[in-house]
Image 1 (cartoon, rainbow, N blue to C red):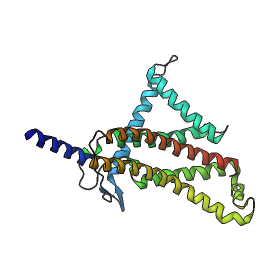
Image 2: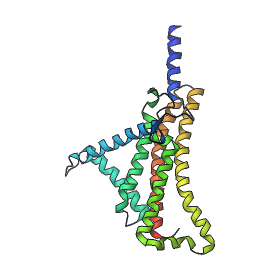
Image 3: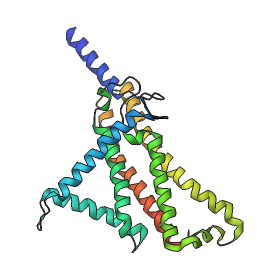
Image 4: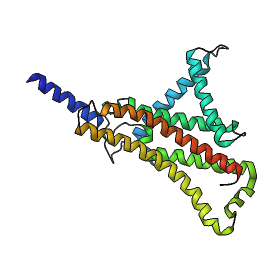
Length: 247
């Protein structure tokens, strides 16, 4: 009987850890602004991981790289390939931006899947991946939109806006609407995929034994990486499109 009660309590704790709190947030008041504290906390953790990784990568580079240096060089080469494929020969200045977007989303998604954030109790809401908050995905999409316009204006000046009346001025409203829907699409695609992945795991944990949701959680790690790649690839494609000046 005691063994049964212990098993039930253990399963209840695992269920509590996997639960998702919807619509609740832990707020900080910064001046006249109210911010989501749990998003700031987890974002700082992700940024710290990236900074520490960058310091380790450049601390002692070797002519003949070791295993750790090989890994960081592979990641850099991968980001450069994505940037070059989508932007073209002028990809160089955009590698840091595309790399930052990709690595932040990738580490954020994996931190949400691997870190037991829900063990840390907050007065309201819960800790989760930064990309699990739509404000984060909107901010990333707006950054991409700013980079998109900056790339076009820096390349062509004010003549960049002539693309809105090509091939005919009749398409002006549609061309303007297209530029506004790009960040919206990026934001909701990333947010929706992350939220859907978490909800699937929660539903499976509540309906079936843990042996079934665990493989799904590992599959979530793979899809999290794909989502980061898709966001970074689309961001690079939009920048390349603005520099080329055609759709």
